[in-house]
Length: 76
Image 1 (cartoon, rainbow, N blue to C red):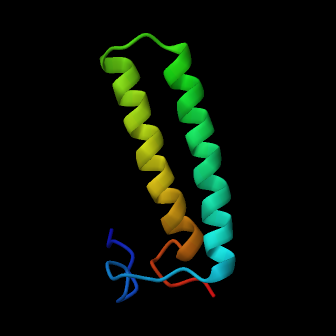
Image 2: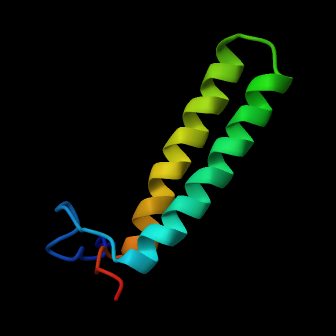
């Protein structure tokens, strides 16, 4: 099975539109609130650290999803 082709700009910088920035800011704030809730509720330790890192990672992938299609093609 061959991997799907990626858009040539997949690994390049893609400046978000103003509308995309608004969406990204709303979702980033939601991720922040979720992370703060987790941080306050769980005891320190490796599991908590893992969870908070995954929330951060997910937040970054949210930004990619807002600006690109699944093959890397920029969203209009």
